[in-house]
Amino acid sequence: MQHNMKLQSEILNRILELLEAEVNHNYQTLSCTFVPIGDCGEKTAETTFFYERNGTKINAGFSNENIFELVDLAVDLQAVMKAHTGGEWSEFLLEVDENRKVATRYKYPPLALST
Image 1 (spheres, rainbow, N blue to C red):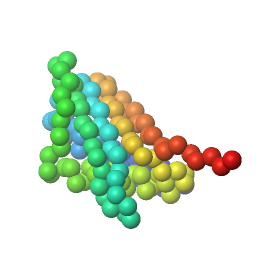
Image 2: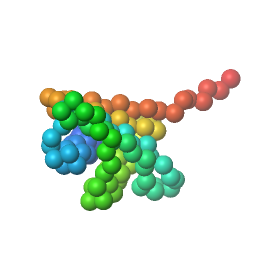
Image 3: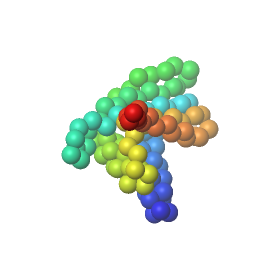
Image 4: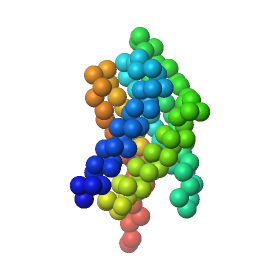
């Protein structure tokens, strides 16, 4: 169980490193959303990426250098968390504030309740 949590932490730290590299570590806040798409282990995801610099919010894309690794990491994170909890999130949001405090939020599909 501990190994799984360590792996999740390592993946999140690497995602943060790549996001910070995208803006040359010059930001007040960062916000990135990953929505994995595809089936059968495909590593694809829709992404959005915003950051704030000097009070201006900027909608950014990812460089070709980092986009594939970021998507791979997000899909890997989903798989690791599913193996750990059995749940499979459908959207992952990572936010970083000016003090470099990181917050993550996960959205899960609604449960189908049987009657």
